Length: 334
Image 1 (cartoon, rainbow, N blue to C red):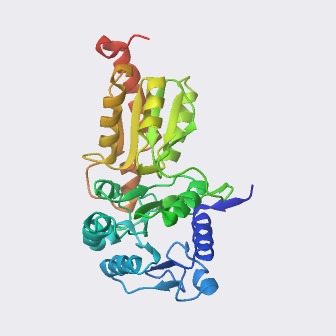
Image 2 (cartoon, rainbow, N blue to C red; image 1 turned 120 degrees about the vertical axis):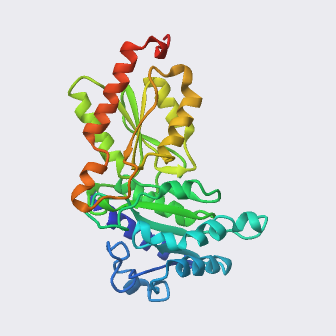
Image 3 (cartoon, one colour; image 1 turned 90 degrees about the vertical axis):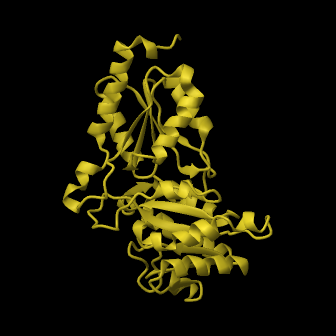
């Protein structure tokens, strides 16, 4: 299969969607002539015209509000928030209108729009450029939230998001934009279905977005010490694949949730609670979380200390092993 970067896969998904459906439009700050800060929309204006892919004023609330109006007129807008924290001015529109319009109109109106959010850290960005803001969106009923971790899923999840009758927030890991991989750019697994990226028997690492590669690196390192870790890539946070996650944890008996965002009241806390509720009698140790620290995103030279890395994941895995050895209360009969 040919190699693609994640940015190329997203660009191809947009190009294919624009070609397939005349109601699809793409807009945001600098997405037209420039092709976007990360060049995800490169060439789309030239190929489809300025009425299908166009620049907007620097006004995120206006961008999303305009998109809501376009859905009422039958369009399927795909809007870009230039960076994760830039989306906050649009948050009132997202929570009060994008997420609630179908319910407010008793199903008479849907909001088939996609909000693309370049998200998370690892690029040495300054303040307001590296937030992991997924908890805000997943806590908002009416939104679907997806976070691709692979080139193939970037294509798949964007195409499925555009075709979805409800609003989707697509969290695109910035540090993976230019990582390349062999991928067949065709529509794959549906939203709401997690996948096992690496099979294992001793513990499950649950991750999403940019944390999946870190979890895989940790699993490879653990294997050198004879510890077999299974890595589950959630792919979508809403809807959440309880069945796949629970099945993995029931096989391994242990679970570590990895997220780049701050730990307190984050997505990882929800995952840990769901695993505990569904797998209590299969657990050999408490469900643990590895996350960013509960601080504002640090300056670029310090972000390596803030982001979850292989060592912190392996430390959590060691705690799982230790809890099982010394505290019989966590032991479960086979």
